[in-house]
Image (tube, rainbow, N blue to C red):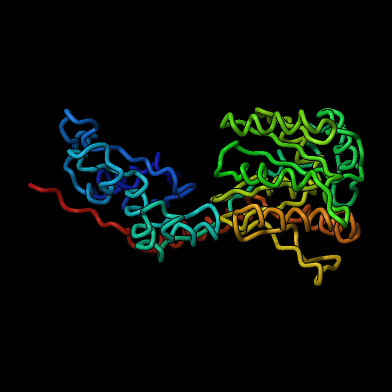
Length: 391
């Protein structure tokens, strides 16, 4: 199992170094794509005065399979008029030479077949569609366990006894300088402070969220924002807290302990990411009964069930809200409905919290699907059969 562009030469080495010598003939390589946005490009030649390199320079006997990694950048992206734009992309080669391809979520498999989701390599990904499988990542259910979380103890809770979640909320409010109040919805965001994570959308809807509406859904809300990244967004966190003492906590930085405390004590998690191959916080949050509001992309789409108030029973339906467009209107829709349910439909909210905590995001579930991919790869001949050596 080779993960991402850093391991893009693994299927090449398996084919060129071993299969050509009839060694490891039964071995297969499965290539796992975590993020198409990172493709491992290396210009060839590395700089203007340098000679071009070949795979012989890396210890291969010949330059076989160079075409699998070869990439030419469009003219408009090249450094200067004499730049031919030639390079090798390790992600491209990993996809083209592996026996099977896996993405970190079923929906992300579909997204990488598109122009936007493939970051320019849609012809490469579509060429492997038949051998590509989407499998949602799992989480460490021992680390993320509300009954035995070292960052929360002695507080503990489960879907059978939620008393500890109220204690976690009160503890978080006190630690971050928020007004302790169990009846005020506590909304959180944890992530890199960058446009990809949609933090600019949170900034855009912030005045609306802190304002008031005729139904009393907005305004009486607490917000915790934690992350590091671009300074302009860090300044937004600081400003939001300074102007809304007792209601907003802007935590610039990141600690593992605070991540656990926030996800345990919050009522609602925001993840308005523009794209998210898998995402983990939305799964951590559900383990702790924190309801996610997410942009329906990648693993966010696969791991959150859209709440349907008309099918609301003791067992279903829904574990959060998903909005289709990554814009302020979509985020407002998800936020308003989650806040309205928290404040005005308490029984429905309580049942949703329990449903969230009963979700199975364990690696055991994902491992079964990976085993099926490994089995299919073993039962098939190598996708790339080794070329004979040139004399």
